[in-house]
Image 1: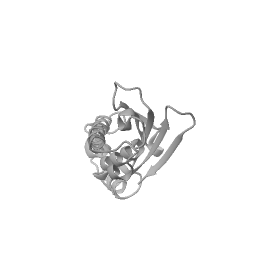
Image 2: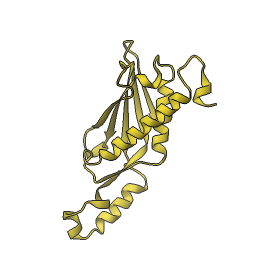
Image 3: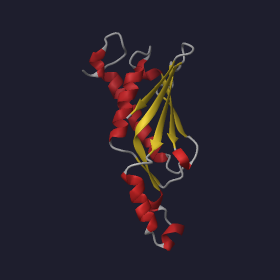
Image 4: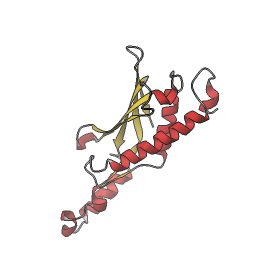
Amino acid sequence: MSLSESDSSCFCGPLEETLAAEVRATITQSLSDAAHTLGCSKLILPDCLPRSIGQELLHLAACEPCGLRGALIDLCVDRGDQGPLCAVEQIAVDATLVPTFHLTLVLRLESGGLWPKVQKLFKGSRPPQASAGSPGLWNTQRLSVGFRAIKRKLYSSGELLIEECC
């Protein structure tokens, strides 16, 4: 069953899915532009991450009064032991509306798996002249497929939802 079929009382449908695709594209572009903010030359997004974020956005906006249009999204990256949480961008899905809910997406840099091992392998064999000039692959970071979504309704007090997404 798709999200648009799940509950007729909730705010779902093809327009929401189109809006989610636009927000996904904005998030992807913001992350690509944020490489320097994160202290790297390039930030790699797993292919499935934007799709997972889009599905989570639809899920969290489904029963909101204005749907996804009412979202104010803070996009952050958790750098783990490489530094504090980095705020990438704040996105008002529809700037003409007063937001009805605040969503914080906390994406994580990949710390396990194959990518860090490959990076260390190349760092160890890097020629001395490469370290001064061009960072290239040596300073490339990869985001994990998992992220945290924190939702707070702005029209009622005390409602906080935290979801771990894999």
